[in-house]
Image 1 (cartoon, rainbow, N blue to C red):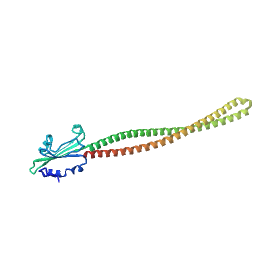
Image 2 (cartoon, one colour):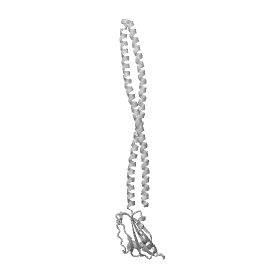
Image 3 (cartoon, rainbow, N blue to C red):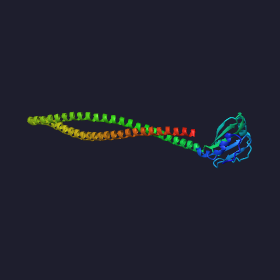
Image 4 (cartoon, rainbow, N blue to C red):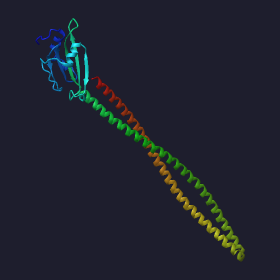
Length: 278
């Protein structure tokens, strides 16, 4: 049983349980019990750079707080030069039955875990923000490709229609060529019947048939070229359509990823908020 060193019952009660209190804290905590003049009981922790000894006089700011009897709580960061670790300082004045200050319970609690958690969540949030920005940029570029493919498909469709129109023109020319060839054949027959008088007409008939044959061959070659073009257009159409579908799927996937990252960002903010409450 601990020796009774306080006249105040509250301070005496704290003295009895002081060695159990650190286990109730979520971070390393130094605990001190003091009367109006000196520190009576001290429990330093190696995580904090305080070496307050029993019997040391209570002076300065702590003495003023105890004298005034006001509750004090403040978070101290390394930037303030008091400690290499962030910690929370709490002074709880204890009064007697007359309302006079008899001493205080003093706590110095490390906030290292909390700050590490905040730093970690901040790092994660920064990384997620960068990933989100990259995904948004990529999504825009993918959408640009989809839009470009749509324009290409429209041009391919127009080209396909133009080749089909050209095919009709070629058929018309082929029909004219056939009629011209028939006309040349009839002219040759008539020239043959005319004998000597039809020789000049026979030359004309031969040239007509020659022109018809040449036109027919040219039409066939052009038709073959157009068939090749139509085949290429159909291939381009199929390829661009397939690529467009792939890019649209990728764009949808990127949106899902962005939504998931947004949820992670929300979780990180909750974690950051939770760290503030530790």
